[in-house]
Figure 1 (cartoon, rainbow, N blue to C red):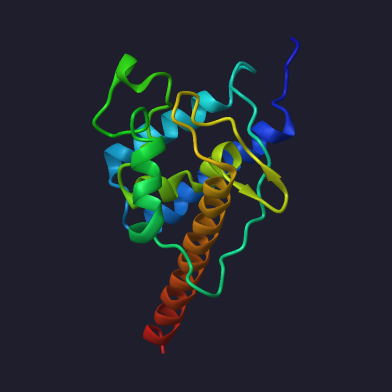
Figure 2: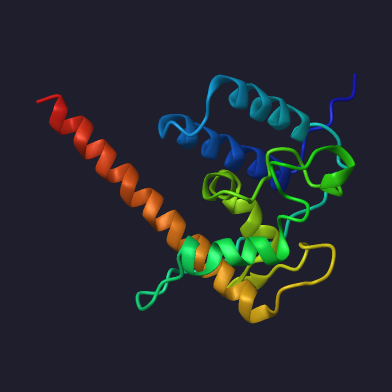
Length: 174
């Protein structure tokens, strides 16, 4: 029997999604039915080599002055470039090939796959990713850089929130 192992990029992608799912569970963003569907999607991601290869992690940094937020940047960016396909309201062919559960019409949906968004559409010091969107209009490089910064800000906020939650758990145990 010839067993073919997935390449490192695929393993990294699946592990990143699994980590985001665990964070979402801990944060109460996923209910049981959504969890089952996400796990089925993860299982499908482990098979075959026909999935597109992601770009690079941009290594973007959240700016200390006027950091972009969901309200000031993210929502408008996703509306302009992403939700034509990546919407929780679209199913089947209306998604134009967008994977299920890659829905960008809510902040929570974006954060579940933020690393994918970074590797497919954002720009930063480590590279410029232009795999998405596949259809016009497409963002400028400056918009892609701001997307990378915004995702970095959201990750920073999530890490700070996780640290605060851990501190509250510790305090409660004393």
